[in-house]
Length: 94
Image (cartoon, rainbow, N blue to C red; front, side, top):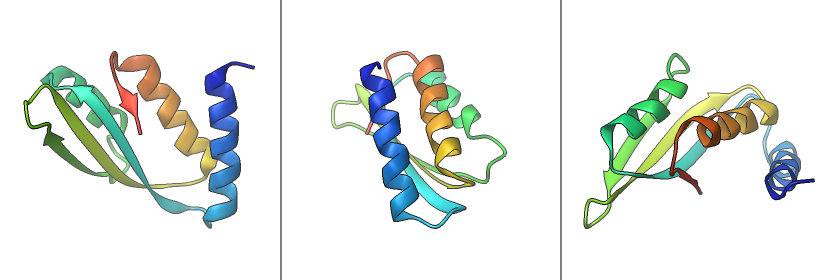
């Protein structure tokens, strides 16, 4: 099992035990401050009614992206993490 699969399995257990689904979930990502990367993340959460906030680092090199969105279940939460990791180069999930 890869490190990421192990991480996702643990996350699923935590999410299942700590929330009643559907539930609001807060994603946090750090990306290089390139408009295209921020746009990519925003488009992945398009049409989900997500509240997205961005904040540049003090030097402006990186941008933190916080996304508050209502998700149906832990599998949907994890699917979005995997989609972001796959599509957005240089992203760090917090």
